[in-house]
Length: 599
Image 1: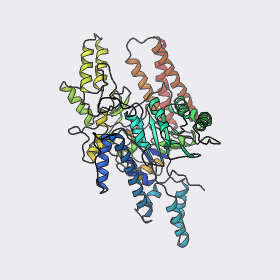
Image 2: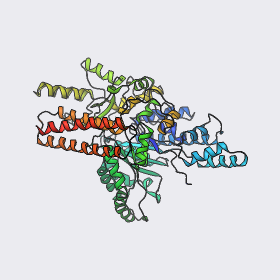
Image 3: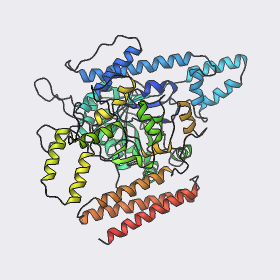
Image 4: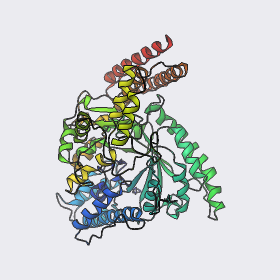
């Protein structure tokens, strides 16, 4: 029997900026892989200070006036995370096999089908020399989880030197990539999310850290987060031509996810996964046909066959049965459990006030908002301190936020230098423009509402860590924004790490809403609501709009047909509820399509 290098097939995705900023330190020693965002260097500097002091090591600040400060902050923090994980893992590895110990916790959390878990059960029943041999075996074969970093490709502001000249390789995303490449992380990966950034992808070629050490062996792997097969093929081929192998495509639900939501044109998760399952070998071979000649052209030795490509999925998974369907029918290699872990302080960093809001959240508390300054829809929990602060500023006649971090500056509508659409400066200028535009009242009000919904995410998504560790990111700015997926409403209490893994593996379900729809039905419902809103909020739609929406409806109906096939194959547990939800959504889509044809 072989023992997989990854003890758990599930991973904890990046969430916000602060919520998983130190998740690897918390969970990697137990064999759980997780991801952190490395874009916000002020937060990272705060975390450096916290962990150096906690470790009783000398903390030397890396100040903003220092050369290359941003890259140095990130690299050092990643090295610090790696050091802490290894220290915790070594202590776990040496702990006694007794009730409540760290090593026992490690084995108790493993899935039942794990070969190591089977050996652990044998160890529990063994005696004498056999028990001693099994103990040696178990200690030898345990491994920590991976440490992954996330770079949102759209967050790539240019930075300037002291003379005002743009630093040629000093943009936010490029700096983060350089910092990661120069860190001492291994058993690791960089995740690119939010689409292709050619400048960033081209920059990968500068670093040997991403080269294959041997067949299927990389110190640092490349993972791309995608919403469909076409996106995976395009981005994978782009990198393959440069001799960069994509080891994993991480499929995320277009709408049933946390944070930024990138809606497809009505393509649902089930059919998307089926396409990946059916074309996985074709994808590997096509990428290899470009990758192998590219590395040979660089003077490297080629390979006899393609490196492995993992297909993983995340977004709305909430039960062991759903995960089993993803593994068994769609043959995915792993699954991401994000939003439920926001209620697990052993894994994530959420301040007490926000934690309580999450646990109490109901169906209408999580909305697909326009809060993001990037102009991308954003799943958002209402009632947070940041939500209240934003409304207070509006009520005082001073909408918009002070823009201190400037990671999301992108708009040049009124200024030569890009500014953030959530900033006080932009909102003042835009409101003046709208007031003088002569728009119909309903269109004017919609645009004003969309504008005023914008929120400072740089600070809001970072502050939770500052509150938890009692070190503010920015003085006098401590409001918190949080971005769970809609799935959060099905979990209503704080959970331990053991409880979460027991839930994930179906050993003991916790805190589920009895009326919770299947993840596929929920995503379909979100797409129907999204389409209704698009149609309702488009004034004077033209033939192109009608054609696009009709195609959207047809894609949804193809998804409905795919899900009916799951029912016929007896792959769904709660068949009646699934069928009822499917029929209701099918009727809603047909109604929308009929209305479009009458226009």
